[in-house]
Image (cartoon, rainbow, N blue to C red; front, side, top):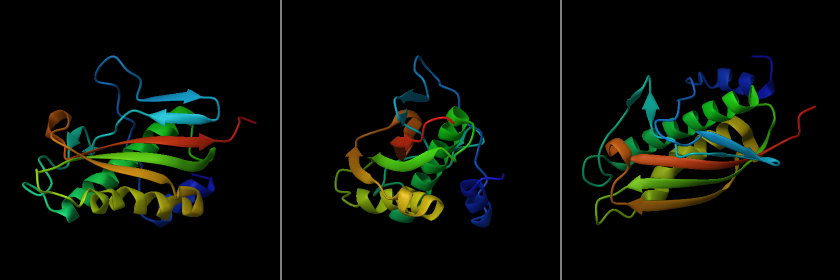
Length: 157
């Protein structure tokens, strides 16, 4: 853990989880030019969802934000596995946050803050990103949140 990003994670008391393997016929992360794109990451910890259900019915905003933070940690785990660490991340370009929502739930943006806040805490200005927060009827495995990311990287030296 000699890099600045790894040092920042340690200061925040955060240990990255192991990158999850794909459960179907896709790649968890793909590089293209100076970008890496992650597949949707669920709020998994130690192979299990940390929460299940719909926001506004089964979970409140605070629980949703914790789930979104876990998704962001899993995004960083995928990026680290792909790049051999996090130091090549030039900036977080965009995240798309899918929130499994009850029909009358309209606070998807507050749930998404769990991920956005983590990324800014870790990367500072480089962590500020464009974002979409979208309410959906259901997500895989009854997950409350799923997040995908577009990340700019620096060339290999």
